[in-house]
Image (cartoon, rainbow, N blue to C red):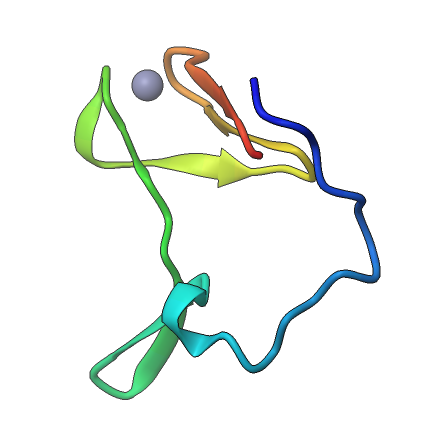
Length: 63
Ligand SMILES: [Zn+2]
């Protein structure tokens, strides 16, 4: 694992290239990930430091 970044005050608003938001049509949504186990249509739930599937329990930790 790479070194963890400090949480909280490290926002880089000018770096749009790596934004976590995407605009689709007239709706701005987070770029949620699909569950690799359940497939497209089943999003991973957003948590503070991880995303988790509510169906199968698959969890991915954020960096
Ligand atoms: Zn799942």
